[in-house]
Length: 398
Image (cartoon, rainbow, N blue to C red):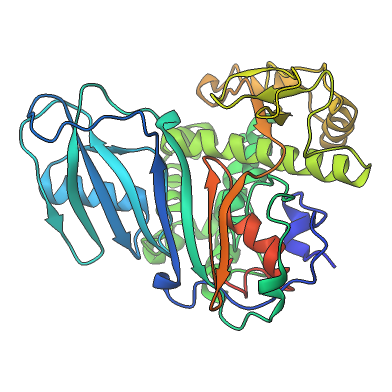
């Protein structure tokens, strides 16, 4: 049986046949460790002071965005990251200065530390973060954990955190933005409730469902609802949903649209799997990524990996997945051109391609702990979903 939350985000099947080991992850942050893997081509100069300084950011109990914001506020250093890591884990990642500066800091705070790695001549790009390595304890796992051998047969679904985890709403907001229903996007942001959410959050969102309660809600809204607070203030002052959306950080506005695209991708992958499409080995005419992450047609190269369209305004129709995508778009009541927004051009997204399966390497299970590496953009929680097959993913720590 597929958990209800899986179907809500477009995941309708397991790709592997194992029984699942059950158990719980993230009982403590230290049980979920992740470290970034960076390209071996990067050369760090440890003696020069001229260039961009690269640091290793290690953190626990704080997400990347808030950690970098705190570093800037406390120490005046503006840093960029190659990826985002959430708060419910111990994480290590590379961050770097946005300007060339001679000062190099090493910082130790309660929730994070910053250690200098070296100097680079130009800023790092996200493509140079090639993947992540994970070491995860599964509390209460059965012996099925040690029988799992299908780590090379896992579909590359987008994971729960892409959609808001306990409140899977980000793709719904994205859908409203694409359909130019900006008022509905704000209503979803403020008042969409989920049975998986905390009771106190649900109560506040039910309160915000009535616009006459906005002023009272603003007085009690917690700091963790920073996006809602921004939107709420704008709606109280001007009642303009477009302005309220534009007051949100640009990265968040774009993320909502990307979440909706992720939902369409998950549904595409589910439908293709259900209909028996070969999703792990490229076929003649397929679009693939090669070992250098270059996109092209399949050329009988064993290192090429099958890719599926990620729908946007430049959607490429000439793949064997067009049949499924067209059905999904019709069901959603949209066309690819809708992903170009004249009213809010900054959220427009041309789309692209995404690998159909997860490249999971260095897999090992020992003492209720699994360790493995996945390439950039793939979700460890999707690997764990296949290993554990949880009845209730959120209760199980996902």
